[in-house]
Length: 340
Ligand code: TXA
Ligand code: MG
Image (cartoon, rainbow, N blue to C red; front, side, top):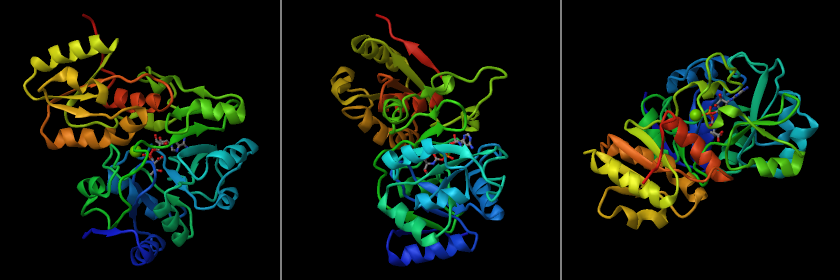
């Protein structure tokens, strides 16, 4: 299949909407990462999404809306959901709610909850509005790879597998949305993102973090979010995280790096001088910048043929928790304690 790569404009949006309504797939920009969209109400289109990504069938998809009014036809949109939507939609928050029968079971991998999100990216909103229907969309990467934060990343992963990629520039947030389970007694974050636990508490008064956010699932443990079971965000290189006091972290990383021929370091901007002439990539000034850059840097390491990446840990608060969640999974929880 030939893949077209087009800037978001009236012509490309008209084509995109035609493709979606004909049961085809379109990759589109959002403020978090690029999505791979198909008609959520068309089972055959949804199956194409799983095939294009090589995604395991037990990993459910997020349905994207352009208007809150669409939600009632798809799920039981609760009072808590309404309160959150008023504050965080459009934006990087996905809510899990009790699904209605109108949504094909393939979308939710047979679960009785449905993940819903209303993105804020102008290109995403124009695309969804033109389609005029709920669009199921996982991140537009090949399964297991870092999520795509530019149209170029999507091209590298899905070229030849889908008819159209809409280019809306680099994704501002750079990490996927916060996934919040509202189907139980208390709200639980299954995947941390730009909408933080503190922000959700400020609206609902309570919000828990799923224990599996910073550690591997244990034998027999219920995943809640099936995505947690799969290897994720992973570059080809082995990734090791180093935690501890900044000076000790830098010392440990220097030692590890110097005994490894094809290594690369990911470090916060202020720490770059610690690494001298070594190959080091800049995570930026703060957690938000690290989030924005992370997936692109992991892909860059692959392009450079790096075999081992050493990465500094960030404080696990606010956006730092989301960055550390992705890093820990990409590293398969290889976290080294720095010592002098
Ligand atoms: O920012 C984002 O959320 C992006 C953009 C495109 O919107 N989408 C995205 O989709 O990251 P995906 O499929 O890569 O990640 C969705 C996550 C997966 O971990 C999946 O297991 C979980 O949400 N999920 C989806 N529906 C679920 C459900 N009903 N119950 C539990 N987890 C669910
Ligand atoms: Mg994904």
